[in-house]
Image 1 (tube, rainbow, N blue to C red):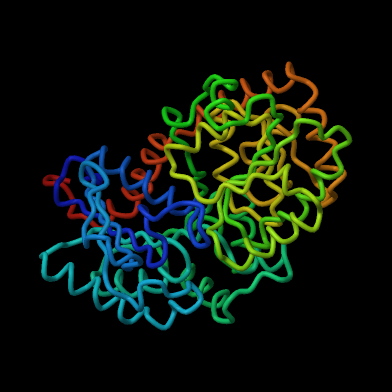
Image 2 (image 1 turned 90 degrees about the vertical axis):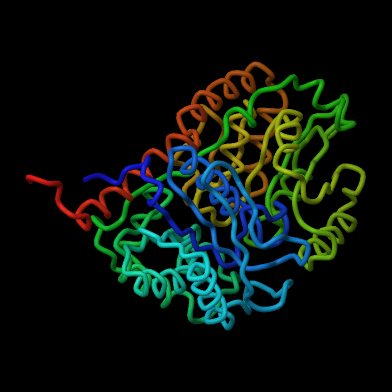
Length: 414
């Protein structure tokens, strides 16, 4: 008997203690994982699975339950103060687990599978799966060992890498974004490769689509500008100092505008970066936009000649895929999962050296050759069309089925 998407009793619990699917994107602790949760839950719901995403209250104005779409919803539970830093959430795990169990018991909810996201949620997922006697699927989105290898200054809790190892050992299935991440799990965490499945993230190609570039520029007040775009959190591991240095290395900076989307006013790294922009004399050239709603992002992607992602580490790099879906070439570090879908010289450029001049060289080529931008944009759009969220959900449902089928009673007469 397979895992039937039409069976209303087939419920999956997504556990995401710190990452809420409806949180505002671009702020310090929100990014690709939040998008992954939102889109995956919605697509699985469309396929007939019931998906409850358990996360902590992070805003006093949020209701406890928020519907995402057919058969999918967010359930907020108490776990520490509303605005607690992610680094302190470990100590509220017992409260989070207890309140998830209280809610599910009060609502008489039974789950057939637990899918945890990130290491904090993995600890909760281990416990809940054991209590409910169901399989546990673990996704990490980032790994402590890879972040620390890529960027020495990356601050990570001492217990994180050990916790990741224990979660991988206990889970029935571990999911990785890319071959690179799977290899790291096997090498650094001693996980048997057959227990790791590679499942790349996806993109909504209806929302993220090519639009009239000049019209988008006019809408944003960027007429006559050559736009270099950054989208993402503002933190040291994103390599934004390199981006500023690269911009100053571009020989012809007439009409050049660097647009930076993400980062909340007052965050320490935002304050530091803005001071650096002033010191470098770039205040007129740089537009620091701050967080932007998901539905507004396509206008920014389409207004840009290129998206730049100079990160020290990216487990996948979802914003790069969103840019490709809009037909915008990408210049990115050759790190993590980016080479999974970003093809050097075809949909953009992968830069293997952390040199401002190397990034500036690629940007100068794109800024001065419109035909090349258009060719790369078309190739990027085609690549994105093969990575829709619906395809991810179909594959993920298949992985769930492979875990659940052996646990179900044999069909009559078998």
